[in-house]
Image (tube, rainbow, N blue to C red):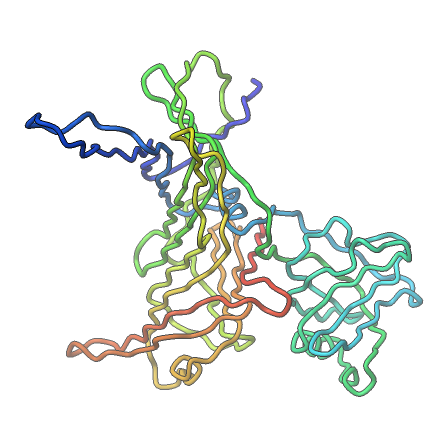
Length: 385
């Protein structure tokens, strides 16, 4: 049966509703009672909470990041004359492709790529595309930070870029990896059935998403919306929605592979709370209507609150010194469908290890903020499934 463009959403609770701002004018008169109330603003919004499962909330995750999900794409270099060139440009490194077709034209403007050498060794690094609108000479150029340029060289066993400024890389394959936050603006229409009618909430943007991972608890998600208005319509006017996803609910053991930088040290994490926010997201309202007429999407930010078991061999100096570097972890279900999450340039704040109880393990508390890496980009997420 054809659907009407809506999709049924799995959830554990929601508070989507109209939000009226009501005032009582303080007119001075002889009556011993308040005057008539007046609605000065009317909008919609609220939250949807759920238990984390693969693909169920992907549209909202991409929306708060300001980007669309893309399928993984790759190409192979088969002609030695077309090996890409890695070139040092100040504090960044450019990778230039010598192909007869603009291979990166449909790639996101930012993300991560996996680069594989002729022997099969791989490295994954964040990138940004530059000069993608100047393709008359069939060149695509993507740019990396200086440190990530070094990683690429190390992965193919070359170390002479910074002596020569230019190196021809013998690369076998380059593959699109994760998406990185960008500047795409997206909104949603949310429909709720009340008896024989639908409440239709339009113009909703995702203002915040919270992921909560706790020991011995099911991973959860909360999505906050701000929206424009609500209309009532008859259910009979609509066809059925697309069915909800049927993927497994993830378990407490789903949070794995927590890493600082490229270290392989195995941390034991007690809890992790990841928050993706559109700072400054707000409704725009003008004179002449109680309803909003526009929306400001704000700017993207990431925070991660951690509680980690502190052990004698933990390399904790980075936390207590307010250091910085990439932070990554993986979330997966029993079918190995997963999200690989990476804060590209994290900064550590307010680290503490309170001793507040006898016979209690010492827990390290640390607040993490995501800072942009060179050229922009704070958070990368790769989905595999």
